Length: 258
Image 1 (tube, rainbow, N blue to C red):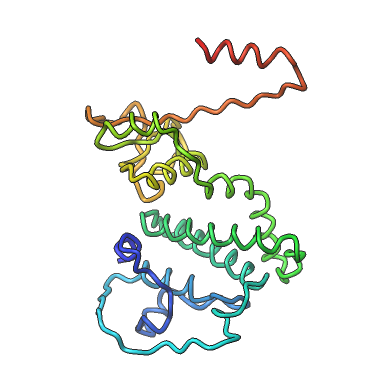
Image 2: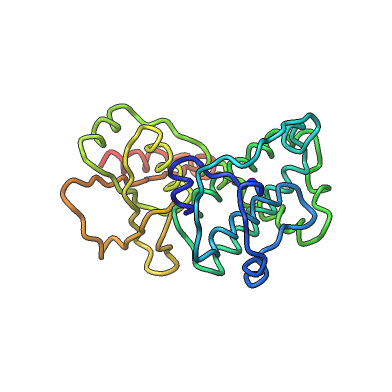
C-alpha cells in the first residue's frame, strides 16, 4: 500500500486519515515519537508497513481547518529540523530491523532526507542547530547527519545530463545504473527527471551490496541476465590533487585519452 501511495503521489502521514486497532499498535510497539514535532511521520509510516491487512476507502470524512500559528503554517524553525532527523533515524531503524527495503520505504526516506537538507541549508547560518538536540542520543543523530552531509548533498542534487548522452540513452527501451552509492542515486534521479526508465541497478560488490536500492532490484554484474534493449550507465569519477604532484594531471589526461 505504501508503494502504491508513493507511486501515485498520494502519500500523506496525517493521523486524521487513518484508523487503527489499538491491539495492533500495542502488539507491534508502534507509538508516536516523543519530544519532537512531526511525530506522525514515523507513526503512520511504521503502522502501514507493519499491517498485514489494509483497506483504502476513497471518501472524505473530515474537513481540515487551516489556522495561523499552527505547526504547519508557522515559519520553519530548528524544531522542524530536529523533528525531521528524528523521524529519518527511526524510519531507517524500523526498516532495517524488519528488512522492508522497498520502493515505498526508499522513496519516503529519500524525500524526508531532501526536506532535512533543505531545512539545514536554510537554518544553519541563523542558529546553532545542535542546541536544539537536547538529549545526548539526539545529538549523536545530528552529528551523524553532519558526517553524512557531503553524501546527502550529492544524493539530493540533480546533475544536468549532456544532450548527446541523453539522445544515446533514449535509443534504448530501459536503462540500468552501475553503482548503488550516492552517485548512483544522483544519476538515477537526474535521468528520471528526463523521463528515462531506470529498471534496476548493477553492482560489482561481492559482499554488503543491497538487494534493493531506490525501490529497484540490485544484481551482481557477473550474475545478471541482460536483454539486448538495455543500456548501462557507468559512473566514472576522477579526483585530481594537483598541489601534491603537478605532473599528475598530464598523466590522468593521457590515460583518459586512451
